[in-house]
Structures are given as structure tokens and as C-alpha cells.
Image (cartoon, each protein chain N blue to C red):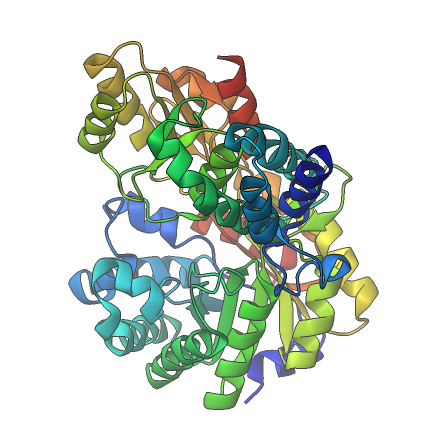
Length: 220
Length: 293
């Protein structure tokens, strides 16, 4: 079993989706996340173990490499794609309660901002690390965030912005969230924001890269 | 055609313009509002920006069309306005530029990624073709494909402009510094890789915009120059990286800060210098003073 999950972790790390996928070149003609996850489940491996010892280590490794600038967005997207393929096999177990995710993360790009690449990267990385992700999309106002928080008790929130002109909307959204559901933790990210800005607007955590969010959630 | 190149061949260093996006917001563009729609709704404000850069001493000005491709305008339900918005954008800048300044039609990324298969190469090409042709119809001398991070998208935009207009084609990408001190776009492309691909695609001027203040642009210029001994280099640097102060974002580098680095960046190989986010007519005036007329 360990061998299978080790292989699965490598598929996630290097973005090997399935047997047919030519990417990455060094894993050509090998089974991908799709086949290995199916085979593990058919062989009786606990879906929880597949998540914890197959998907999560692979996602963690790519997250660290991305943080260290040893891989870039395309590699992360391929890893995320491999992860999503494996997740399709695991979804029924999450829904039935046979396997559990670690918590819920609600994410959206803030009001006025339509950029979703960074937000999507974080969503994929957080999901691949064992969390349920509620993706509210782009141009999201405080009401939508609050409604999602009320539906998902205890969820942590992530606000994304790419533009210097929209990052200011994070302040209003954060304060509305804290007013409505005071114990909610708010994380922020995006090219123009930083730790200092996070403190000034009353948010709880800033991460310069997706792995930082994962580590924050894991510590919480 | 090729008029900008002709000027550069005389050994001139040219001055480009500064920010449009941050300037439009100062004039009242709301977050979430379509900037290109201002070419129709508030043409006088757009014209004001263009004129202010010409008056500051720019040899060339861009157009308010950065997000004017159909894929991006679709976010606002305005995909059918590509021709109107872009043609008008070029007309406004042409009016400010007159006959003796150049108009660069701005073409930004679509926000869609080839690698995730949310868009095809042909769809990208068609979107850039439509936009470039409208900019030419409005009087653009050149097309500047800018803020690109994916090399294939950049290449498709350059090809679409070259094959469907008579404009000179410029292309700049956006780099940031890695922990190892190298420069890469978000998609992992280095200045050297960009240079090889875009020169081969037929761009007549290449370079970098956004993502950095002028100090970090110097290293990018050096890498391009090392890869190609003669391709003209254009740099549009930010006024530093944004900081948050009293409820608004500010860019820390003053016109004097930026001007102080102009000689060094020309020495490294750049021959067209202008600004990106946070730069103002004041920055362009200061750059003009260093370069002289």
C-alpha cells in the first residue's frame, strides 16, 4: 500500500494526470493519479489514507517548490489537475462521511476585481492539502462571504486581490465579516498585499504563497 | 512603417508614457468598472491623460485599451464592443499625439490560460487580431503587447498584430525576481527565453513592463542584451512596489528616484523608457530631463 501511495504522491508532485497524459515527459507511459487512485480504492486502501499519504504529501512538495521558485504556475496547475482527478474518485467518500476533510476554507476575489489565477492556485493547493474549499469566484462582496460563513460554521476565509485599486476593498469586507461572525479568521493574499497591509486592515494572516495558507490552516 | 525603429537607428533614446490604469482610477474609474468603456463614456478624461503625457515630454503614448480584447471584455458583457472601444482608444491618443508623436496601441493578456485548456491558441489569435486591427483603424502606429507572462500567448499576440496590421509590433513581459536572484514571469519564462522567442516571432522592439521598479529592470535589460546584441529594448517600470497608507495604495518612487536610474538603464541597453503603475506625468517629465530632447 505504501508503494502505491508513494507513487500517487509523485503523480501529484509532478502533475501526472493519467496514463494517456504526455506530461511530465519523464513519466510518459506511466500510470497517473487517475489510475493509481482507482487501483488503491479497489485494493481496499482507506480513502482517508489516500488523502493523507498520497495527495497531501505530493501537494505539499509542489507547494514548497513553488514557494522556493523552483517551479512556476504551469507546474502547479498540472499538479492541481492531477489532484482534482484523484479527488473525483474520493468525493463519494467525503460525501458519505467515510472520509473526512480537515476543515473548510472559503475563498473569493474581492469586489471589483475579476482576476482569478492566484485565487484558483490557492484554492487548489488548499483542497489538495485535505480541506473542503468553497470557491465564491471573483468580484465577491461582503454579503456573499458572510452568507458562506454562516453555511459553513468554523470555516476560515481567504480574500484575494490583484489590483492596487481593489486591495482596499479587503478592509471593508474584513470588517463586515468580523462584525457579522466575529470569530471568523480572515486570510489575505495577492500580488499587491503584504503583512503590513494585513495588520492595518484587521485581517488575521497574510501569506505570500499558497503553501503559507496551508501551513496556517494546519496550525490552527 | 517602422518609424519608431527608424528613430532609434539614429541613435536616439525615446521617452514613452506613464500609468493609465492608476491614473484613470484617480479620475474616478470605479473598481469593477470597465476601463475601456471610458473611451466612449468619458473620452475627455481619457484625452486629458494622453495630453498630460505628451506635455510632459513623451515621444509616444499608449492607448486606453489594455483590457480591450473580447475575452476580457466578456467579463463585463461587452465582448461585442471590441472594435468600438479600441478604435476610439486609438483615435483619442492620436488626437493628443498629433502627427509628430507615436501612438502605441495597448494589448494586454486575456486572463485565460492555454495550459488549462480554458482557451485555444486559435481563440487567442482571433481575439488579438480583432483588437489590433481596431487599434490600427483608429490610428495606432504600433501595437504594444504588454504585461504578458505566458510566452505562447505573447507570441500569438505578436503574430496576430504582425500578420493583420501594418503596425510595428512591440512586446513586453512582466518579470519578478526569484529567491535565487533570477528573473522569471509568473509562468516561469526568463528574459533570455522571451528574447529568443519574440525576436523569432518578428517583434521589432521587446522589453519589460510592470512588476518592478526601475532598479530591478536594469538586470532584465542586461539579460535581454546578452541574449540579443541589437534588438531595441523598451522598459515601462512601476514607481516602485505599492504600499498601503491611510486607506489608499501609494507607489513609493518619486520622479527624482526614477530619473536617477535612467542613465544606468540606458547604459545596460534600453532605448525607450517610460513608466507603468504609479508613474505620473511628473515621472515622465523627470525622465525626459535626463534624456534631453
